[in-house]
Length: 361
Image 1 (tube, one colour):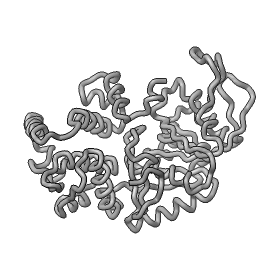
Image 2: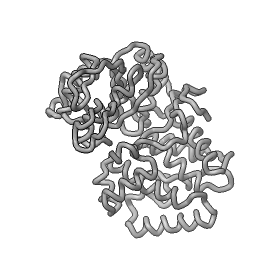
Image 3: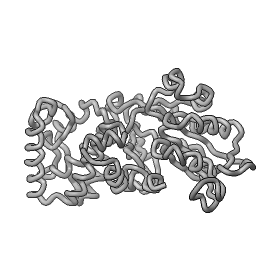
Image 4: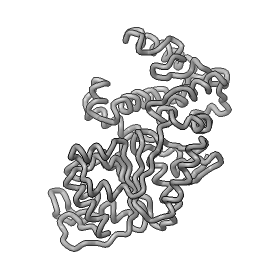
């Protein structure tokens, strides 16, 4: 397992610290094994070698940040890689977060502070969920890209910045432009080098190496190394359509390792939403009472086997599943779990599913 961002055998990308807490519901590993994926990797690296703004387009959990990090690594830029989730920043503070502020610029601004553009000077700034940026900020972002200068909130003098911007979106920005929610001039400025990252169901050749990686990763973490997977279980994972993409695959393998027996993951250990390989039939055909009874049986089985860190693992699984199924909408996820948004945010921060520092600002 690597401790540094690298392209490993099988052309695998991971975060600098594979076990680090996530900033969002995101893919923690990405491989380029499928023929189409290898061709895409070549395109990514050619774009990385040119100092142009790039736009990574793909569904949630496909590995957009990993692509952005690889672009930075290949580009040879000496400055840092800075990742910012536009959807996680409050609308009232996003201006100050991106562009910085002077002391007294607003209530609570007791001292001057550099923004994310200044923090990424000489390097790469990754703006995830760019489609969530308020329109007033879109104008300012466009000006920064054109003039390569930022003006802190409350200041008049511009500051030069040398930043390569990589943006990402999981929505159709052109439709947002047509609907009047996104500026067309900014769209064209960002879309100089578009990179379309296919969903996992369209690159099934990447699934087997991802399975092996997550078995190794969570096997080490859970202290159950050497676990294998039966051909039937592997085939079921390759055949599944993965609406949650790589992140969903990671969760399924993690859970399967916890409930596995005799040193192997079998078909009955997989929990695939609505898939025909589920031991009790498709979940959609079961009443809520039946589903809860099955969960209770599984929970008793986990307790009997002494599954490690059971409470934390199950809590994370519940929160992650609700957040992912709600397309990372905190209000909808809280409603699905019948808890307040405040409680949900506490759980999301506890399990590293949102940026703790950003959420507290």
